[in-house]
Length: 249
Length: 212
Image (tube, rainbow over all chains, first blue to last red; front, top):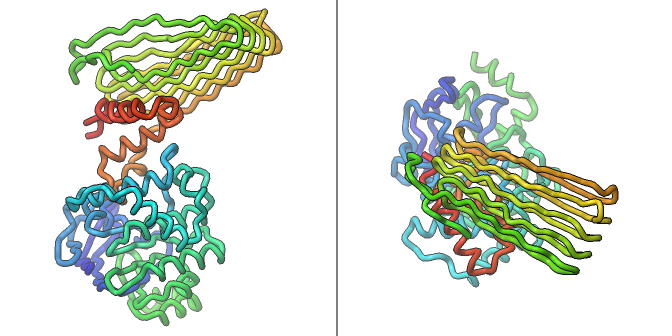
């Protein structure tokens, strides 16, 4: 589904990604791990199409279609979803209003009419129940005054509503206590199926106990230096990243 | 709601809109002004309330949008004369392009106005780096029992907000409309339903093409 071919990327003239290749098929969960500043979040941003990040070489394709030149919203219309590490506040815009707008804009891009209100409400209720989200929460301003857990749960709620082909979870576990982590992970697991794929970006092995990856990749200094199965995450937890550094020398 | 010709994108032409509006509140009366200002090259407008009667109430809810080379200087005067008079001011200024947007308001508590109260909130939203937002709150209090509150914020539509919307499939124009509507919500909520829908559309049109 997702093909990343020898991608180089920079921010403000600083090279961050230095030749990343990754292939993700439908139905798979990939974990991307690595120390701070290795390029994990940059990879997420470059797939999502954030403007400040410049792809200097290489290609990204989704279902064979090159998305390298597409705007962020066009990529979203193709089914790319990014769960933000730091979700953004929009005062005065309720969670419901925001997701309604997002869904209808995605439908518009596909030539569909707005989703009927009754269908929308039903869907919102269903997904809110799935993620144990309180109704009152849905009428609050987007991310304004939300706790860390609420923000992340809201990201996964949006993911549930938009039903993306490819979901990238950028440090979704940061700022979550263990109960919130379980709810979020549980939500992701329920949304996973054979037609979509998930990329989990994380520092810690902890989240991977709940969202079990098929593959684990380690990024260091802008390159994938090691790939393996879930076992690799355990080894990293035990030995730290220095172990890989030494192995590379 | 006023939407006079604002002049060209280069600032040529356009209507000057200088308005005088004021209302007198007798005992227990209430006046509420709600305005949405989007047009005119230059706007000076201060709908005001003279709270003469005891227990009278004055309200002012305003959204002013300026784009390109527009200038808006708008606000209200709340003149408290009677006892237990109350006033509320909510002003939302949105500036884009090279425009200048000012809130200018007076809250005056006369010596005769025992237990007068005022609450003012002035929020400014900036789009881009070339526009300006200004707040000039004048407060004159001649009675010690008065309670006056003034809050002001200035914020800028962030690239992060836009990207967040983009990532959810919402294009930039629509994203700005969403942020602006959210920002203006407290005032839009004061309008009758049909009118609020019109006002929202007018905001979107006024800001069209304001991000390159």
